[in-house]
Amino acid sequence: MLHHVEIYVSDLTASHAFWANILARIGYEETGHWDDGFTLEHGDDGYLTFVQVAEKHREHRYHRCGVGLNHLAFKVKGREAVDALRQYCIEHDIHCLYDEKYPFANGGKDYYALFVEDPDRIKVEFVAE
Image (cartoon, rainbow, N blue to C red; front, side, top):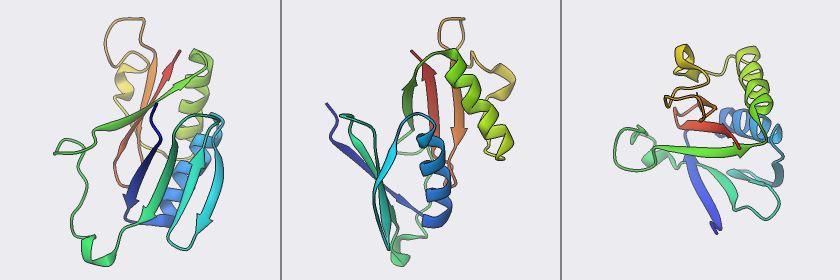
């Protein structure tokens, strides 16, 4: 089982607004907050920690198509939950990826998912169980 993931972010305030609010919709809770970061947890799942990147490393921008993390995917309970997340994203101007193919961006009709971007353009996926 995954213990935790730590992600450095370029703007902690923007990342907190994105991650804390969208993940609260699927049961995550903020369990820690300090000057340079915050942690979100969901039951016995691994937790996520977000940390403000140091100024000396800010010039190294993230790109999901380069070496490193491509995306994070979260299971949600059913297609209705995916649809509700999409509506939330639309109402809060969160960039939805592959929207023209929603909800079957992976092809077929059995993989129902929403793909969005966080403030640093990290791809986030929500897939119906």
